[in-house]
Length: 623
Image (cartoon, rainbow, N blue to C red):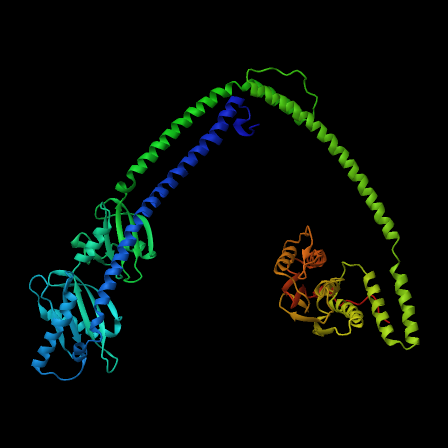
């Protein structure tokens, strides 16, 4: 291998080998090591996050269960007779109101509070300004007027709440509380007229977060408003989450990422998951050093050991390369002679201590011998190929000489037409005139550009012949006569597509319908050809579209809708290529649609004639 260019042109083989080892072993190892370093760090973090993700999921499940149980415990209030009496507009005497309140506290409040240590207090509020409160379990002294005022403000927001609403954090005295509410409706009017308000301490929520964690990190809860509903550090309850962390948490419902904690100054891995029931986000702060510190240390030791082994390997390879210098130099000189075409090499081979190098030289001599043989075979093959091409040309010439002169056929058809007119056989005359026109039109150069009118006229004569053959064939032609003289076409491109309808579109059945219509666009003029034949399978439709798009001839035939291999798309491709070679890639043939047993639609896009082309005069007149 030669290393050329710049200052490396005069390097010795040893120096070049050193450069190769550095570039192709040392540098890739460095790049691969860097990539592995970063990817392994990411993999370790993902492993650690996956291992701890179940903690977050279990915490969310427990919180959802806790809130659901609380919601279920409020259902007895909805249809209770005392609650309905409380919500009604009936005037109550003070004593009756006292008895009602006593009944609610003894029967409903006591039943809900019994066995629960997380409820601070319960309030019933109605739009008739009635309130029943029970805060006997609240720690310390309370200002009940503030609680009643707060309850009235919640009642004023009744229409904004769901049936069961987590209102958020509040304070009952000096105790932070989570407030939830259940809307109550009057059975007689079915209108919401009251609220059941429950204030909960955060002990149960804290127990859920601490019981589900494995220790060593904090699990806390963020509400919809971006404030902390619960945190192990009670001083942070109700405080807003720092903006940078809040943005990353709100971007996705569940993920993990690294974050530099501004409070402790340590780097942490943050895992979070949002609950679809409560709307809360459970977040876990995992100190990164405690989490994956041991794995990172092992990874670093592994990289260091690999680097040492790489240095040792490079040293061994460099030392071994010295034993290859002399035979490689000899081999380089022999290869240079072969490159110049000199295959006459010295017959004597030196024997080396290295058996592998001896085998290399033996293989080299075998290779040069094989190259000489292959060159002779290639030369012989080229001679045979030239002889075959000459024979093929001669065969084509003999075939052309054997063709009947089209002019002779045309003149013969004119004679037949004259006899048909003389004997008043006008149908035969019409068919003969159509066939004569087709022969004369085919004499012209197939690549010449003509007005679209000439191509349409040629197709009409062809369809006259097909109509005589198929009596039930219905032909619909909807063309704008004014456009036929201002649109260009390539001779003999429209009739092959129409002929394709009879050959393939109605294969195995009588042709029944053929439609030809036009559509004028700003950049092109379209001819749409439609049949109601057997159509194509989805696979054949895709294959023909690929052929027209790539303009590559297919290697084999394609299956028609009847299962037989009858077409390979070459005829369609030839028309498409002729149009694009003449007018440009924006024109040509397109397969618009084909549905099995319903038919096929082709579209031919042609350009408008420019003013420089002038008006085309037909080169013949039908008689």
